[in-house]
Structure formats: C-alpha cells, structure tokens
Image 1 (cartoon, rainbow, N blue to C red):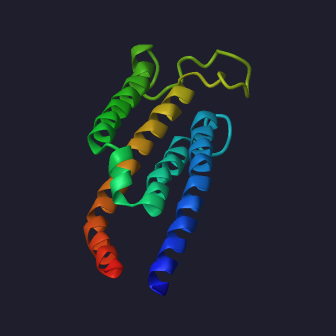
Image 2: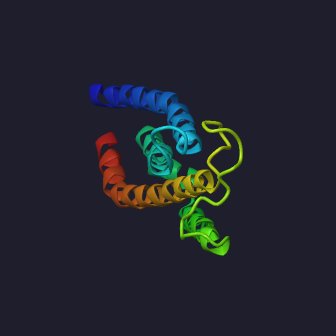
Length: 159
C-alpha cells in the first residue's frame, strides 16, 4: 500500500511542476524567438525552449497525453513549411540584386526597435519555427520509443 501512495504523491508533484513550468517555457521560448534579432539568443535557442514543452507534458502526464497534444504529422509538415519559408527569405537577397542571405529591407524603423532588422528578423522567425517543429518531432519520436516499456512497468507495479 505504501508503494501505491508514494506513486500517487510523486505523480501529483510531477504534474503540478509540469503545469507550473509549461507556460514559462512557452513564453520564454517565444520571447527569445521574437527578440533574437535584437538581443542575444534567437531562433534556434527559442525553438528548443518551446520544444521542451513536449517533454514537460510527457513528464507530467505520460505518452498518451503527448500523443493527444502533439500531432507528429502536423509537426513534420510544418517543419517543411518553415524550411521553405527560410529558403524564400534567403533567396530574396539574390532576387533583389544583392548577395544570398542578404538583409534587403534594412531601412525600416530605428536601430534597436522591434521592426528594425528587415529580413533578418523574418529569417530568425523561420529558423525558430523550423527548430521548434523539428526538435518537437524528434522528442516525440524518442518519447514514443520509450513509452511502451515504461507503461508496461507502471502497470506491473500497480498490480
């Protein structure tokens, strides 16, 4: 009986912690993505922080909850959309008569403003979305591979 009670207490603590840190992970990740072109950080770092939300859901609620919340096919398709968006933005420099991956709309806004970086900001957003979807998809695959053995052990422990 003590084993069951300790499992229930552990689940409550882990679920509460996951629920507490999930919004912080999402807000911080999107903040880093959106402000990465004018501050340290950027698309890659912010995308990984947001993708950690999948791990928090897994720790708190298990693999079935992750499967309900995160659709792997949606992530796979959106990773391709983000990659295409990035390629379009970096080729825009060549189309405008400059170099590949050139910032062609750099004369918008004042230096340091949110909309002052031109195409660099949009490239950063595309990278953030690509990393977010790609890393979340990889985490989903890894968690799905780990889940069957772990769930079987939990069921055996409960008996």
